[in-house]
Each structure stands twice: as C-alpha cells, then as structure tokens.
Length: 432
Ligand SMILES: Cc1cc2nc3c(=O)[nH]c(=O)nc-3n(C[C@H](O)[C@H](O)[C@H](O)COP(=O)(O)OP(=O)(O)OC[C@H]3O[C@@H](n4cnc5c(N)ncnc54)[C@H](O)[C@@H]3O)c2cc1C
Image (cartoon, rainbow, N blue to C red; front, side):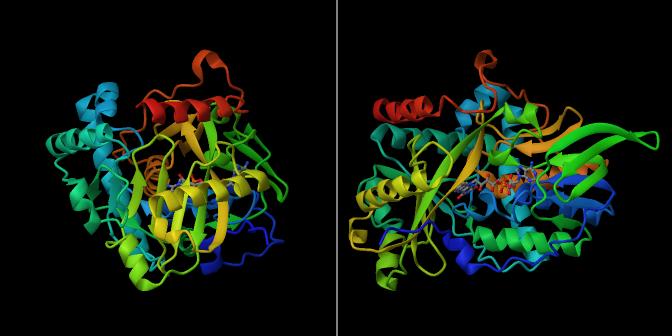
C-alpha cells in the first residue's frame, strides 16, 4: 500500500475548536496575519497589554511550519559564528547569540506560564560532522563561542561519540546542553489557547487577500480584506514565514520558500531507541543539504531533511519519503526493517542572507526569515516585535540589519531558481 502523507504530530494533538461562522470585528488595534508561532506569540503579548487583536489565518491554527517541524528548539543561528562576526561585527553578533539563547528561555517560560503540555525538555542538541574538515571546524567554533559569548559547547572526538549516537559514520560531534525538544503541534495548539485566554480572537479560513492603507475617522490605519469580512486595524503584524504571499508583495520578494520533509518510523523497542540516541538529543549533521533527526516522546525515529527543495506537494512528499528512508538507513542500519508510519512536508523561509529579519516595512510590522531555526526564534520575535508595537524599546539585535533582496532584483516571489540552488548545495557538500 502506498504511504499516505500524514503529519505524526497532528495525531497527538487536539486543536481548539473555534466558531466558524463568527464575522471578523469591524475594528481592532492590531490585525495579526498568520497563526503560527510568530503570529500567536505576538498576539499573546499584545492582548496581555490590553490591545484588541484579531489573528487572521488562511487555513487553521498552526497549519504552516509550526505544526510540521522537527520540534528542535536550538541555540545559535543557521549561519556559523565566524560568518556572523565578519558580517555584523563582534558586538552585534554577541547580542544575536544571546538572543538565540534567550529565545529558548522564552519558549520555556511560555510553556510553564501557560501550562502547555508539549513535552518540552532540555535534552540538548548534537551536531555531527560528515567530514574531517567539518569536525576540525567544530573545535574552532566552540573556541570562538566560549571566548566571545561565554557559552560552552562540548566537542566530542569520533571515539567518544558512541555515548551520544548509535552510528559510526561521523567524524565527531559537538553538543549544546541548553537546546530543547518539544512536540511542536501541541506547543502551537497551547499557544493558541493562551492567545484566546489573553483576550485576542483567532479567525481560521480568513486569508488576508488585500491590505490597503486607509484613513478612518481621520486616523490612518489598514483596511484588511478577508473572505470572512473586512476589518480596519490601526496596525498590522505579518507572521507568514514560508507561506508569505501576494497580500504582502514587498516581503514576499525578500523570502525564498523552501520545502523540508520528515518521515517517522513505527514505535521502536526501548533498547533499540536507547542504542540509536542514548541521550535523546536533537541531532543534525554538518552538511548544507542536511539531515536532522530525533526520537519522538513515544520512541519513534523522526528523520527529516531538505530531500526536495520545492515546497510540499503530493509528489515531493512521496519522493522525499524514499530519499529520507535511504538517508536514515545510512545513518542507522538497524532501522532497515523499521516500518515508516508517517511522512509529511512543510515550507520554511530563507532570506537571501539566511538571517532572521524583523521590524517595519511599508508601515507594517513583521518577523520572518528563520531558515529552519524557527521554533524558538519565531516565538521570541513575535514577542519582541509586539513589545515594540506596544511602545517599549526591547533588545532585538535583528531589527535594523540590512534586509537584502535578490541579487540584481531578479525575483518576483516565484522561486524559479530552486532546482539550481538545490544542485548548488549538493555540489558544495561534495567539495567542502
Ligand atoms: C519540515 C520542517 C521542519 C522544521 N524543523 C525545525 C526544527 O526542528 N527546529 C526549528 O527551530 N525550526 C524548524 N523548522 C522551521 C520552523 O517550523 C519555522 O521557522 C516556524 O514554524 C515559523 O513559524 P511562523 O509562525 O513564522 O510561520 P508558520 O508556522 O509557517 O505560519 C505562517 C502561517 O501564515 C499563514 N498565512 C500565510 N499567508 C496568509 C494570509 N495572506 N492570510 C492569513 N494567513 C496567512 C499560513 O497559513 C501559516 O499558517 C522546520 C520547518 C519545517 C517546514
């Protein structure tokens, strides 16, 4: 029987039921677009400050990457620290790295404050080296991170790796104990309950089709058009990540939507699960075209990667299932007979400089560009930008950094270059 596309996390999660027929309000302080981590975190913060908030979601709560990801809550950013220092200088990079750690604390605090049952656990992450030169670079990175950011990563030689992973294909590893794991669908569902508890309203199947800067009773704001009605908002916050579309064309042109895919095995016997991942780490490898994997709380192996570069369709999901299964068996030969129970895909967003970006564009507030490091950072940016909107001056080193568009402006939001980008990354993995 062909494997059906199905997201494992959703099978564990109950989302709140909202009244489908309720019209959108005529007037709000803030219209938040997108009900993922970013939008919901912003809505929670704004509503707690007393703002009247409507969250508008084209599909359903958490429908985007927020319910589909690996649930890895990771320190650092997609780019390495040396690259960050050469681009932004030491002082700003120090603040960025500190923000990446604060972002994990932010998730932990929300989970505790809102009593969200999402298996949040500080199990740490393990990065594994696919080549000797990648491993040599781990030692250099750990040294810079200790010196510049006062944060300790543990570098493990190949012969020490068996305490961390039941695979002998890697050249060594690097552990950060502060990273965490969670069930992302339960987390986003819990966040949506917290938003409603704080007094905001969430509207599903309310795709924002148009945004117009419009005066109302002498005040400038936004006319927001959705299939469930039109509302007027003093401010708009955009948290649409890899699903950013034509309602916000300037932002769409700055983001590349990239597909990422995951398979999940049947429940594994406890001794086998312990052998594969003795410390239950969030694991990813050192390639550009990387694999990431972990055990789920019920002991399945969850194995993901950018198996196809294009966003999820029936076809890319099916192809990815076969590619990921082969990749998983290369890492873990004992899984060659394990049944694959689930496969699914999702879309994440890359900015052209592979950095998170947040602030204001064309009068709208936004936070985007997490490049696969979004569980913690999206939650954090949603909160920080909401604080900014509420009149605070929150520490946020990502606001104000240059936000480049495509080279020579050669991009209209339709990523025609993705097959070339995929081939380029594979080539880089081969030569570097
Ligand atoms: C397969 C996969 C694995 C990943 N693994 C990890 C991981 O392990 N760790 C990690 O840190 N990150 C991971 N990520 C990235 C992480 O999931 C994202 O960065 C994060 O979820 C982004 O949250 P968000 O709220 O900004 O966007 P999303 O959760 O994508 O939400 C955006 C929402 O906006 C809605 N929307 C779009 N346009 C409109 C409109 N016009 N009107 C109304 N609504 C609209 C969409 O329907 C969508 O629900 C992964 C991503 C994927 C796809």
